[in-house]
Image 1 (tube, rainbow, N blue to C red):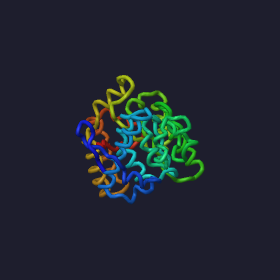
Image 2 (cartoon, rainbow, N blue to C red):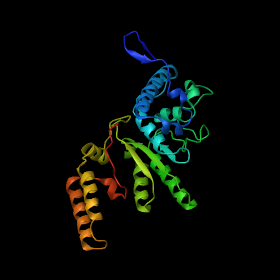
Image 3 (cartoon, rainbow, N blue to C red):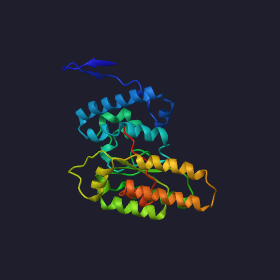
Image 4 (cartoon, helix red, strand yellow):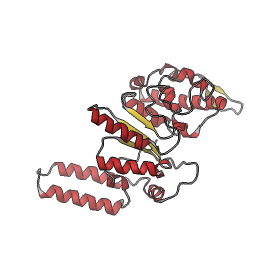
Length: 266
């Protein structure tokens, strides 16, 4: 249902889909149309609640679709979703059994404005502020492998946080170990202050040229049709590496051992 505000604009007054979501596994049963409606309901719920309790609006409005996608694709809490900044965890809280208490956000005795492991099994890491997610995710992924378990570990980090030394050290070490993990770069050009440095400059240049990714897919298809173990395969792969150096000379992530996929708008 919608109603008119004093300015004449329409806003949601109830949340028929959001009010049914008590567990993120329920997202798998929703159609694309329902997911889009749910995203609108979540945005309105965020605005209504934060207007009363205080909190962070823009960082959460910016991850609505991303959070829905993560919880639809992955199986939390078995799969570990590590949010780099706790300020962007409100949508995650709404989808993981805390909707009925969301009006207590940041209130005495209420739910936290950050992610708290004691608050929910879905909060895999007690994120406060920036730069820690990749390191934490790497530690969890290494522990998973040592125990012989099989689940996904996903770090969600912004372009501002990625300039932190701790994040870069973790990316470097993850590539060295070859650990199976996912790092999602939320390249929203947001930070407390203007981002500076070589990493920020590189992201500004990339944002993101799709030519290399298209070429990589096409070349991989060609390689699969070539005889196994032959020199032709190696020659084609060397050619692709040369094309990458020409087209995207600063594609740091693949040099660190990650497979880069992107960009995804929305």
